[in-house]
Length: 183
Image (cartoon, rainbow, N blue to C red; front, side):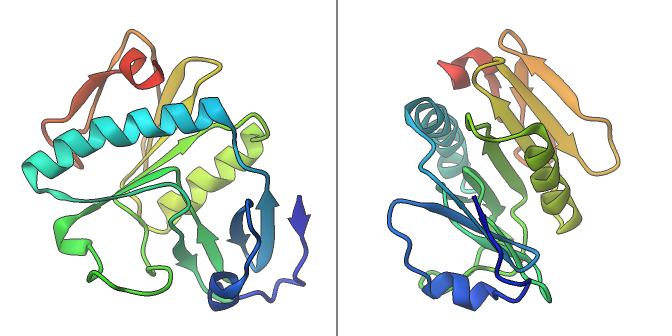
C-alpha cells in the first residue's frame, strides 16, 4: 500500500511516525507501507546476515545493519530506503548513538524479494541504491533460488544456487555458495 503524502513527507517525519508491525520506506516524499514480510523472507535475510557477520566482524572491515535500518538517499523530495541487510566500511560508519537515518548509501545493500515485491519495485530500489552511491546491491529471490549482483555501470550478474558469491572489492575474502544463503 502506498499512502500519498502529497510528495511532502520528510525523513524526519518518517522517523517520528509510529506504525506498529509495518515496514515503511519513504520514496520521493511518499510513504510506502507494507505488511511484515513473513517467515521465508526473514529466514533468508538472517542467513545472509549471519554469513556476512562471520566475515565482517572477523576482519574488522566495517559494520553490518539489520533489516529496516533506514538510509536517507535523496532530499527534496526525501527518499529513505531500508534494505534487508546493509554493510558499511569502517571508515564510513556513523558514530555509535547517531540518531536518525544516515544520509548515505551503504557499500552493500541486500534486498530479499518478498512475496509482494514486484520486479518493477525491486528495480526501483536497486536504481535508488546505486544512484545514491551503493557500490553493490544483491537481490535475493528465495522462490527462484537466485541472487542477482548489481554494480554501477555493469550488467547484472545472476547466480544460481550452485554458484559461488564473492565479496569482490567491497568485501575482499568473502565467499559463499548461494545455496548456503538460501538454506
